Image (cartoon, rainbow, N blue to C red; front, side):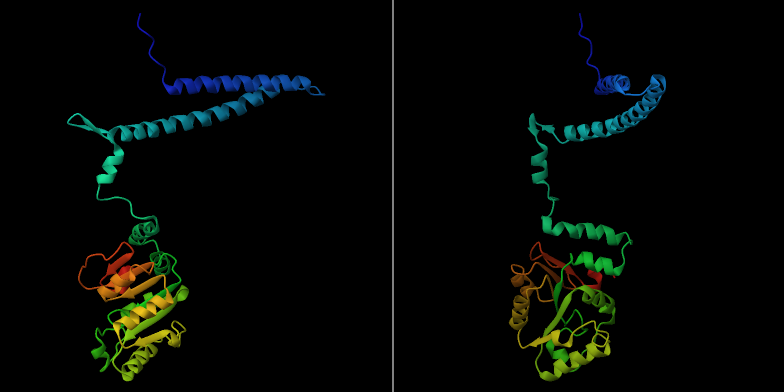
Length: 279
């Protein structure tokens, strides 16, 4: 004689729900008899039945709604275990062999931010805050980032502020302690840089502090500034400095017009500062 097929989980859930309703109604009837005043048992039973029915409908809806989801989860779990040449490969091994593994925990916010600002739903202020991962101190090279010039020799003749970076710089300075720094060959170069920043309205508007614009005579001097200030972010165009600082600075942004190999997991790259923030 063939055994009866097992009942699906949903039938068991219905029976348990019906049993629960019966016990609830019996409990109310028992309690009504113990009360010191007369209770209309028919009325209280009707109210209790209505309440129990409402709860039953809600629970049944939740069960029915969850069933397809659970089925899909089971299907996914089954699909993650495949048989290749008679050997079973677990889902863990599949994940470990995949090149698209999850990033370290301290870098995950960046992926979320990318999706958010690409959707166009965030203001520049929110994009900057999220992109910098709520960092509070930023050090930044001047040449090639804030200024049009790219070499210290150029500064001996002129210093030109990049107007396209102004909005981003203003937003960064709203909630970050910003230090700008550069290697120069003479004092006249420093004066040209400060004048360019002043003409851009960065000092008079209180965006930047003139005392936090630093100058040095060597590239190692700039790296020393960064090490001493211990910022949350450093922005630089020199790949060697970025590489050397990757062990000490939480995040870095390497500004480069050409695509370069990533120095470390905490180093990001972009052709210019404003493009990193989607401007």
